[in-house]
Amino acid sequence: PAPLTRSNADTSTSARCKRDAPRFEDDEPLFMSRDEIDRCSPSRKDGIDVLHETHLRYSYCAFLQNLGMRLELPQTTIGTAMVLCHRFFVRQSHAFHDRFLISTASLFLAAKSEETPRPLNNLLRVSSEILHKQDFTLLSYLLPVDWFEQYRERVLEAEQLILTTLNFELNVQHPFDPLTSVLNKLGLSHTVLVNLALNL
Amino acid sequence: MAIAAPGQLNLNEYPSWGSRSVDCFEKLEQIGEGTYGSFPITAIREIKILKKLHHENVIKLKEIVTSPGPEKDEQGRPGLPPELLLGTTKYGPAVDMWSVGCIFAELLHGKPIFPGKDEPEQLNKIFELCGAPDEVNWPGVSKSPWYNQFKPTRPMKRRLREVFRHFDRHALELLERMLTLDPAQRITAKDALDAEYFWTDPLPCDPKSLPKYESSHEFQTKKKRQQQRQNEENAKRMKMQHSQQHTRLPPIQQPGQPHGQMRPGPNQPIHGSQPPVAAGHSHHYGKPRGPSGGPGRYPPSGNPGGGYNHPNRGGQGGGSGYGSGPYPPQGRGAPYGSSGMPGAGPRGGGSGYGVGAPNYPQGGPPYGGSAAGRGSNMMGGNRNQQYGWQQ
Image (cartoon, rainbow over all chains, first blue to last red; front, side):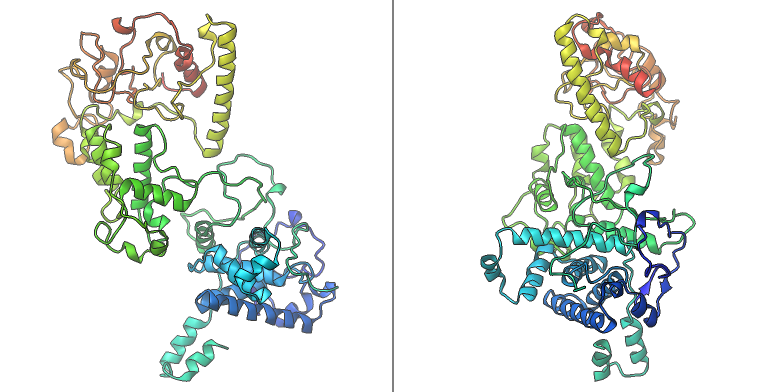
């Protein structure tokens, strides 16, 4: 389950404007159970059921993995981006936010947060190639003149939205380090198990 | 309802989660202005650290509020050292010495020395002046994250000495060491205090005697500059209307003195502690620089080098410490001996060292009396009132 920083107590009844939501007294990370995530996701009230959301979740993770690998980002960065996306969509509905825009922006953000920054233009280029399944040079012919600038602008807006939605909670703890150290202790560091575990 | 269309992003509705907008606060005081557009990695780094940090000496990061600011950051941050511009994440106090060097040079030069609107441009300006970094002058530079991206394509020589050859010799010496590309070779603050520049005439003044300014943040400074421009406009208008009534003119800036208010340039005396009346007729702008034939700046009885009690130099100066050194007599007495000549030091009459009474002649014969001529003469007086400088 995605670790969250706030109780989800009132997400389901969330007509609440954030202006009058001063829930900033404690900084204790709070966790949501699988069941809570399934029940209270804001996508529910927009008619997106659990199964559908699982599928959406899977699709942006696959996209992020692809994008991250093509940008030669380390797995931790890709993992961070995925967690940021999960955190985002447990607070925002899939009905209003294009998940690929959000995931592109969250990878950009994760890359900065994990000290593996990538130039925005590179990222945009690769991401648009994946999304349109076309070579970048072709895209310029297919799309309106200023599509790239517009796309760039959009992703930056999404970045801002992610940051405010997550209340700048960008720290993500990954299991990779403890995992490898446990495998080391068990003397399994050179087995196929390592790769297997890391790719779970 | 279907899922969002490609490219859809709902920015109009506030999420029920997350950080609040800045709108829900009443603004008490603004201490600075952030950047708009993409969130810089430095800010992200800082926020991450502050969020994790729980220490009694560090104020807790309570909350971050944002606003979708319309303005674009108009200028890069001047004063960023090359190691940061090349993407190093491990850096130390040397970054500040670089910035000090930038300000030092700007004071002497009269304008920013690395005016780049973005980071690549700034880096290029740095290379143009300080030469291109390589493994010889900066061991390890090629391992900087963005070195290959930004390394200059053509050979570039260090031109610092040539470009700033008009600077005072010791100033240039010090600047050279502050603007050293390799942070490991850059001068430290401690060594900089020991630089010849601070130990040759004109000596630094007693810090206590420096004029007091109200707090200055970029936000206020911006406003002040606007105000100042307004005043200049008014002054021009007034001048046209009553060309005789100079004394009524609001403060105006000398042309070519971009930030005069905050930064006394080499040729412009501080109006600091000067009584308003004296200010009326003693300004002398554009005093010739360079050595003059005048007598020494310090009275013979003065204690050369004693003012600033540097641990390493204590013996030399008689260890008189702050305040008890040559300053008071020098300031209040006839500063330049009996001749009344402006004993212009290497940097034009010790300007910028407005101690007690100023270092330039007051109503002395050469610049004799009369509030004649310049509207700006009231400036000292006005400022004294405005900013409550020491009298």
